[in-house]
Amino acid sequence: MTTTLLIITLTISVFANFVLGWYTTRLIRYVNLTTQDMKTFKNGMGEYQEHLETVYELPTFYGDETLKALLQHTKDVNANVKEFIEINNEVLGDNNG
Image (tube, rainbow, N blue to C red; front, side, top):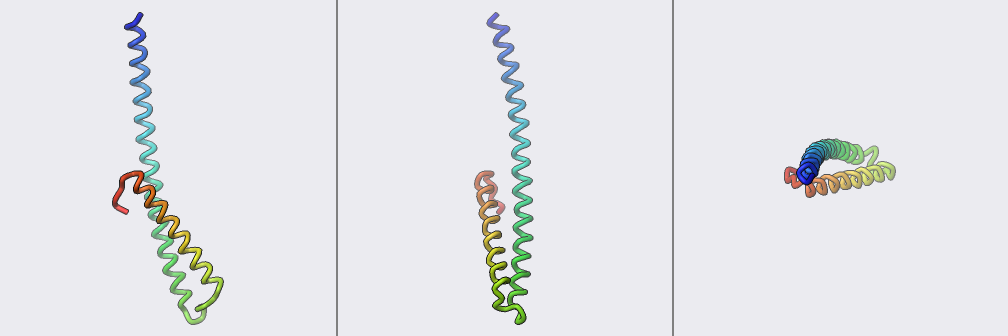
């Protein structure tokens, strides 16, 4: 009776460990993919910010309050994305930035 109970418990434990290992692997892949997507998004935001700054500096648009507010909003979004990536890198132990 005790042997049967131990075998059943061991079988359940091995199965549960397998499922948890599979789930953890999938979760890590998802987080890595999300982090890579956010890095790509951040790069795109940086390019957009540079373009917007270039337009803002043109004599025709210099000092325009709407563009100034849009430029500030872009900088804020870019900073938020950078912070998100840094937090993910800390959690994942990724030092590649």
